[in-house]
Length: 138
Image (cartoon, rainbow, N blue to C red; front, side, top):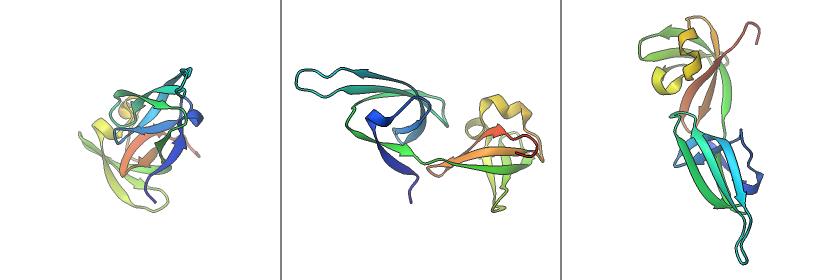
């Protein structure tokens, strides 16, 4: 299925996601310039990488299509934590995998990770990131 789809630039909004330089990014700002006499309106899209936190920007005609990542949001349980990785088990498939702490765990939750808790993780473009800790019964 590939982890992406195409969306017209004019349909994008801040908070949505886009792929820039093969990196899934969250859109933080879109500014549209009015069209010139013979041109089409252009959109400047600023976005932050989900995995690397880098700010990227592109300029595209609003009629152009861009790649948008398809993000699977799943629940897993933390099985073990090492200095460099977190081992998690998917709560539906019971598949186990290791996630690097530096790129695979949202910075704001790193200190709160404990063995046995449930987390929400996102999977896209063959990569995984733990995004948040889930409360009881979530």
